[in-house]
Length: 118
Length: 108
Image (cartoon, rainbow over all chains, first blue to last red; front, side, top):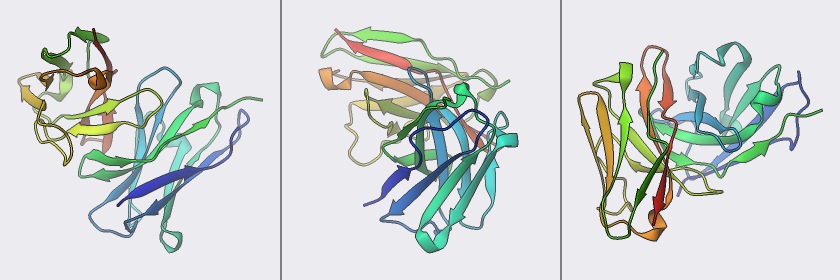
């Protein structure tokens, strides 16, 4: 059974880099049929797609975040990661890692809240 | 810009049928996926490709998509169906998902 678990800092300061890692169990991030995604949800608000990455390393980003985001695969650890640069308070959100099957999400991590505050 | 428009809230009595709409605006013709999110939990896929149900999702959940509007229908609504529901489509121009604003389903 597929399980995804986010990990990262509990707090990030404004202007710094937010880095999160998703550890995958029950499937391989090297799978050619799966993409691995990051989605976020500000407190009390709706879902926002951040981007996704394929095992080949090809990545695809929401245009609204593209200039600040990098999503990478780390096959040896069966993980993938999110880097979001130059964060502000508006980036405070619950960040979910997920598996993207075709063009929808079929599995989600439990999510991790990342506050941006000095 | 591409937008998906959902009503902020829908209320329904137990045992009745709830219908949650998603206006596709510039996304007319695209397949729609639906997620259920209960407080403090991650979203759960309940409908994909307009009307397909993942394993484990009750048959009470169904979906349709016609013209510029997709609809999630929940029959014989139960108290446990109370949740936020989000529609989602794929923007193939820039290869990313787009979510609707969400609809809070209240079971009276």
